[in-house]
Length: 118
Figure 1: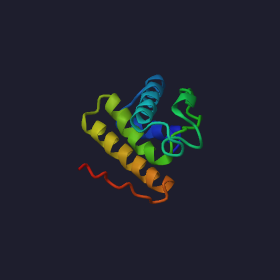
Figure 2 (figure 1 turned 180 degrees about the vertical axis):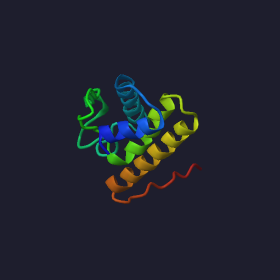
Figure 3 (figure 1 turned 90 degrees about the vertical axis):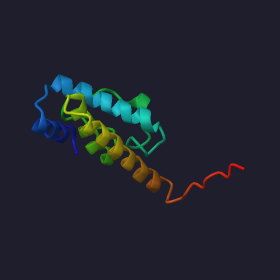
Figure 4 (figure 1 turned 45 degrees about the vertical axis):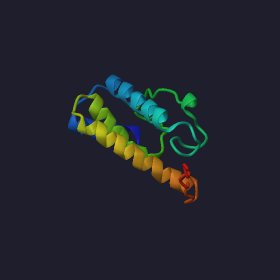
C-alpha cells in the first residue's frame, strides 16, 4: 500500500488535511519503531533503522515500513483523528501480528524455548 492509498483509506472514514495526515503518519511510524525496535528486516525495508527514517513530505514518497504494518498504521491514524479507542486496540493487535509474522520469516521458523526457573 502506498502513502497515497493510506491517505485515501483514511479520508474515506474521516476527512483530514495533508499536514495533519503527515504528522499522524510520522507518529505512527515512530510508535511502531518504539514498540518493536530496530532489528533489520522486522519493521523497516532493508537495513534501515529508526534513526534513518525521515518524515514523509509528499504523497508520492515511499514508506519505509514493511507492508504488513500498513493496515495497523491506518488504524492508528484513525485513532489520532479522534475516531475512537477501538482503532488503537486494532493498531496494537495488527502491529503485533505483523511483527510476529516477520519475526517468523526472519528467524526461519526457529522457536524460543522457555527458561526453566527452578
